[in-house]
Structures are given as structure tokens and as C-alpha cells.
Image (spheres, rainbow, N blue to C red):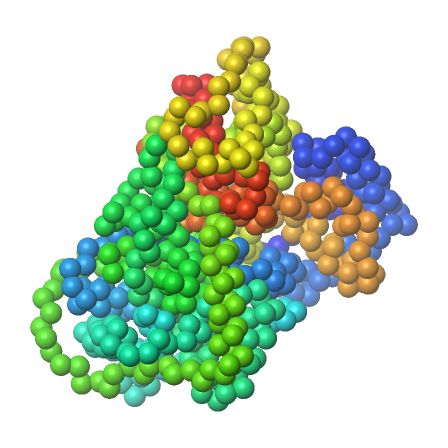
Length: 635
């Protein structure tokens, strides 16, 4: 039995909260926050009562924070899932010569997903254990059981989850050219289909969809809307019995397999240093282009209607061999998804290629889902298409490979790669803007029952002092909206900076060590269950429940600044040449995922073109400068 998530003391959390605020708010705002905290924690203040409420909740529940966190992070968020919530993952491209190759690859994916499901059902999942900080401690495995067969359901006020049920029959949904097909993969009277049978079923769908003489309704594009709007559209669809059955089939499917036409090579084809956005190619496509395909499908003219974004697992296979995943984030963190898919890829790569034997498929063809569409839904599909296209056009996304070094060099500097990269992100932001901002990095709390994540806050006073010293004399490198087109041109447009030396190299190294020590301290606090964000969230929600209104602590300007994450980051470590990315969480913010390899680091940087303050490629350039400077400092 895993331990329950702890609750830090009020004194501990409030002291740490003030420390978090110091580098990101003004002295006046900080002083006001001190006063508010003093009143909150006073003997006659509400803090002690709310703390007791949380302690009682901890005694009564497996994880006192789980639904507070789930609702705050996902279920109460009204924003559309594509870009704002669902990550996209690009996996190593395949080589397809014929449509049979595509069907065979899909069949092997499905077959291995079924093997994984059977292993889960039989209780064969190997217990994972912590590899650092109290090594050997068992980790919560609940996330792994939520990937297949789950789905998010929209609500006008709050979303809900459909979680997987144990069934004697199982099916997948195949999406092709905005058509959906139900492919049974396990029957109660005969067990699981063979790989050949699955390949034949997939081939039937792939051959059928292009031959239809009508343009199918792009019902899937309704799932790109704001959650309240999609909830209304879903209720309208459910007025027709035929649609009720279709939606049940989609929501209860183990996963979606989406067969895409590749988006144009020119889609978002912008980089820096005169090169396209990304470096590795599949049929002429760069990595940023492939990431767009996985995150949102390219828009209503391409593949965005060929999706159901509520579905936890959407495997996407393009006709040019690029492939990957779009996943709905609420049931699981990235680690479970990455381990599942990379394990399947490894098994498929070890399988011998095989000649198609041309054997007949004696199973009935897969059922094509036919939708009953009223004029109001037709109008909503048209409106959802326009909204989705506008959101997709606004996404500034850049896959950047830093090739000068990777985690081998970083470890030789006796620094954690994650700590090192977090400080590089802080330095890159400071180089551009001359200050630090509230930064989110996910920290796993799987050492505890039903543990998910807490927040490592990387913007510390130690990081700020080091970044200031590293940028001595440079000044902020900020561009105006009118300059943004230059972000994508060649080296000659770099802003010239005059630098001069104040601090010795030894002093800069000492400042770096202090910043790294602080970052490590915060990381350890979080993974051992003593982070402040979950505790503050619990106090806030307890205040809402017990008091009926919000204490000033949670309406204070500093609290709002602290929870506006202009830099949202996470490490998504992949053993293959894969990467995962997502959009920013605020209109003027950045998303930054990273994947450290032995001799390179892959970054997925995102921003919004509509912001006059951000640019993904300019941030990547600043990140390159920062990583180079850190190498020179520590070599």
C-alpha cells in the first residue's frame, strides 16, 4: 500500500510561497502579500481551520488532493482541447510503399495494444520504483490503467471522464477522410482477432473511405470547440438515437486510429539561422510540420475533422510514413503514454517483415458510422471549423534540436540534466525580456497513492541573480510586433549587443551552483510531496467549500501573477528519436517541452502569433545562446 499524499504545515508552505513570489513580483506587491499571509495564518485567521479541514480530508480519502487538482487543471478548464491541453507526439517515421504496408503497420499497433490490455487485465503490469531520492520506493501505477478505453466528456460547467470498463468485447475506431469505422478486435465468443484479420479490417476502411461519393459531415471537428459549446453540440447530437450509438462507440473504443493525408510542406515552415523549422525530414517534411499534424491535424481543410479530441489515445498514421499521437491529458501524464508506445515500437521493429498472402477476409467489413445531422449541427460544424482554423493559424510552434551537447556533458558538470535545462530556460527568458516570470515544471508525485504532479517553480532569486550576472551589460533583447517577420530570417538580423565583464568566471560558476542547488531543493520538495501548489490549491478550495467566498490570499494580485505561467515546461524523456509538444497555457506565454539525449537536446517551443510579446523561434535562438554560454562557463 502506497502512502497518502502528505500535507505540509501552513508555516512551511507560506514561507515557501513568499520565496516563490520574490523574483516575480514588485517589492510593494511582495509586502502586501506578507500582510495578507500574516492575517491568513493569525490565531483568529482562517488558515488553521482550513488546514484542519484538509487534514481530516486526508484521513478520509485515498488522495485528498486528486479531484481538487483534476478539476482545476482539466475538468473546469473551458478552453478547447487542441493546442491548449492535448499534447502531440511525433514518433520515428515508417517507410510505406503501398496501402497494404499502412494497414499492416496499423494492425501491428492494434495487436500490441490488445496484448498490453490483456496484460493489464491479468494484473501483469510490472511495479515501477523510484530511481532517485529514496531509491526503490514503489510508484503509483493507476495512470497506466486509464489509457485504453477512456474518454473525456464535455460539460457546460464541468467536464467528466468515462473510464475504461472490463469487457468481453473490444473495438477500435478507424478514422479516414472524416469517416469513422468501428473495427471489433475482440469478441466474447471467439477472443481476439489475429493480426491478419485486423489488417484486413483496416484495409477495408482505407479502401472504402476514398470511394464514397459524398463529403461526410466532419462531426469530429465539434470536439475542437470550447468545452461548454461542445457540451451543447453533443446534447444536440444525442437527440438522434443513431448518434447516441455512434458516440457510445467512439467513447468506449480502446483507441482511435486516424489515417491522415499529410499537411502541406509549407505549413509553418519557418525557422531561424536561414533554415527550415526542424532538422529531420520525412518525405520532405520537417519536424515542426509533423508536430502540427499530431497536435491539431492542420485545420478543417486537412485532418482536424478526422479526430475526436476527447479520446485519450488517438494514434495518427500519415500516408507518407510520419506518425504519432494526440492524447487527452486528464487521465494520465506523458510518461505512461511514452512508455506504452515506445515499448510497442520496439516490438514491431523486432518483428520480421512479411509478404501479404492475399488471403480473403471472411469477417464482415467494419461498420461505417452514419450520422444524423440537423441543420443546426451543420451550422455548428461550419462555425467550429472556422474557430479551429483560426486557433491553428495562431499557433507558433518550433521543434529545435540543440546539437552542441546533451546530457553526457551536463552530467560531466555534476549537474542534473533537468536542473541544467530548467536554468537554461530561465536564462533564455531573461536574455529576451530582462526579468523572470512564473514558471511551471511538472513534478511527479507517483510515490503516493493516486499521485499525479505538483509544480516545480524554476524562477528563483538564485536563478535571477545568476541570469543577471550572465547577461551583464546586455539588456533585454525584446522585439516589437513589427519586427516579428525578421525572427525567421538569416543570421544577419541578429540584434547587436555590447557586453562587458564585471564578474569573474569563478563567481559566475558559484552563482550557477547556488541556482542549481535551489532548483534541486524545490524539485526534491515536490517529488517527496511537500510542494506548495497542491497545498495552496487545497486551501483555496477548502475556503470555497467552508467559507463560501475567497480569502484575500487567493484574490491578491501576487497570487494571480504566481499562477499565470508565462513559461510552461516539462521534460518528456523518450528513448527513441521521438518528441512531444503542446501549446502555451496563457495568451502571452511559452510552452517548452524538452527531451535530453546523450549528445543533443530536443525542444518543442510554442507561442501564439497573436501575441506581440512572444516568438517561438526567437526564444529558441535565445535558448541556443544560453546553452552555448553555459557550456563555455562550465567547460
